[in-house]
Image 1 (cartoon, rainbow, N blue to C red):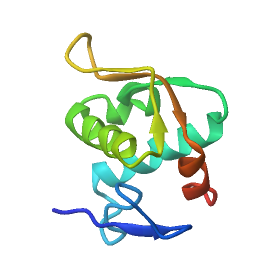
Image 2: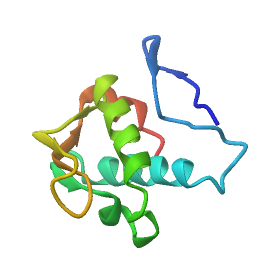
Image 3: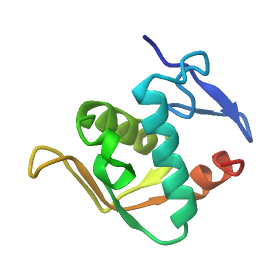
Length: 109
């Protein structure tokens, strides 16, 4: 299963916004949508983001969560104070907040 890029605004290529609309049952699709929606609703306040924070159904999805958060950081859509992996029960992005680019890309959520 692969993911694809979607052009957003000013020609920016945003990784991990959509992982394939053809498979809404896919846990990564739902986790990605839940993360972006949660971050958008909490903006402009930073939050501690973890799989469990997004819903109990996502608690065992640590690897998918790490891939999604890392992609959002790499694309300049998400800013975090620090990203804890392997130091607790689950990965946690501390003080996570959408950047202006992330807010613009998620305006329809």
